[in-house]
Amino acid sequence: MNIAIFTDTFVPQINGVSEVIKNLKKGLELHGHKVWVIAPHLKGYYDSDPHIIRLPAIVFPGVSEHRISLPVFSKINSRFIKKEKIDIIHSQTIGPVGLMAMLLALKMKLPHIHHYQTFFEDYVHYVKLPKAFSKYSVRKISCWFCNRTDLVTVPTYPFKTLLESYGVTQKIKLWQSGIDINRFKKGNSIRSELKIPSDAFVLVFVGRVAKEKNISFLIEIMPSLSHLKRDIRLLIVGDGPVRKELEDYAKILKVRDKIIFTGYIPPERIPDVYHSSDVFVFSSLTETQGLVTFEAMAAGLPVVAVSAYGIKYTLQNCKGALLVNLNHRDFISQIEKLMDKNFYKKMSKNSLSFVKNYDYLCSTKEIEKIYKSLL
Image 1: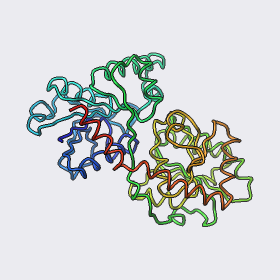
Image 2: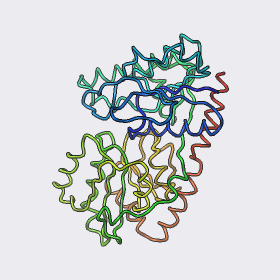
Image 3: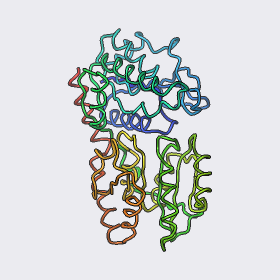
Image 4: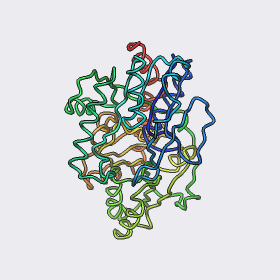
């Protein structure tokens, strides 16, 4: 098959959507398919893969790392579709590039599958408009877009319910993307580089340092954890708009010396981060699937996470993860449990066993079946 993936976000941007597309493309190509990715251009970044086509783009107001494409004068048109003999169009976002995918699919009468994987209502604070109006717009646009595709896939069941509440009547199917498990199996400790004591018990968060990730919750548990006998450190890996705010918050709570903000770390070094840590901690309330938790588990880390939205449908309690309500005391108690060596060893083993089901090659087989059903 010849597949065109349309997205408003892609590497080098670090987020779940980029990771999904990267692994999807790799998996499909390993299975012998030809895959094109159409995405916004980022200044100073160039792709070595000729099957990645960048569109002219401008900076999204208020979010410097995101881009809005300008597809009006794009070379991606009906001639491109005919020349490359595209069989199916797969959109990953509902922004300008996603709209382009929809229009081309309708014009060329090609099957169009859309993967709805972002809880956009929780991102409206980035748009300088009244919150109620922004959320209303998200619902209406999502409904309008999804009903003009041939199939919508979602990573977890809450999204199916969400889209139905928006008024989506198109068929909705569950499809969970995977990760490259082998990539995270091995890594080198970089504790000395990060100035973390070798005997410290290290909690780690990896992701965008943004409001929707609820990282302030992790900082709030540190005063209580610092009273334990173990030397506990919190490693926050990533960058984003609220980093400075969180650093100041840590100072107010008098735990700044126990928290390491690394800023941006290249993707190829993320396995080293996991292998320098003990427990992955996650307090996001709007996560759709939480691929980053799978990465940590692939490195053998137990996970302590708030059981919210997509997370409670992807992770299973005691199978490598300990799921709790949004409660400081409960979250702390689960971390304390993992300080027991025998229990930790059991949970680490469970993580490795559980994550085997989420290898990207397994998810590739599932999406192939979906493509064929549309063709």
